[in-house]
Image (cartoon, rainbow, N blue to C red; front, top):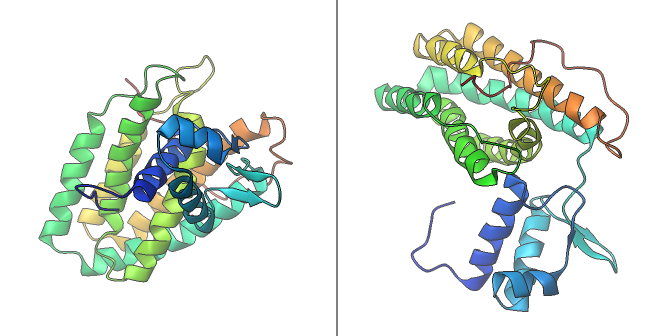
Length: 249
């Protein structure tokens, strides 16, 4: 979404709530009291309610009859469904972009990869700002790859799915420094995808991307499986190791 010079109160409330949900300040299952948000954001009650309704339409907020609203729970089954759908859409977008992309599209991919390869990882599980900064660069790279697909509808679906997968993947990113995290160099994964895309090898590029996303599912699913209330673990994704891990420092 483009930044406005002077967004309305409802737009400001929407942007802040959305960022806090995606970046982990508001955790899965957390209650969202309109009155409490009004005080914390220093905005009117009507803009807060409008923002909650808008986020509910994006499935980033769950409205509950007579119980207000909350951030949707993290669910193993829901995450598996999300990632299976993301991988289908990603293949369609990436294949089309490789057929249709021009030199300007290629240049943005290279630039996004360069910036991402130099991005700093969050210093700790409490470093939400660092995680958000890394995630923005990661999102820029993945968005650049599919940008030339030629279908506004496919891109809308892609961005929606990327938003929701970001909410889950943040669990992995914030815990990358923990003992036993088994961190792997994901920069090599990104670079291999970029090289396949720039060489216009659609079969290799889509296979690498599919394995990369499947690995993200496996990595986050392991964390969710150890989280009380996440539900029974589904089968692991069909391909790939844990390529979703942040790059080594």
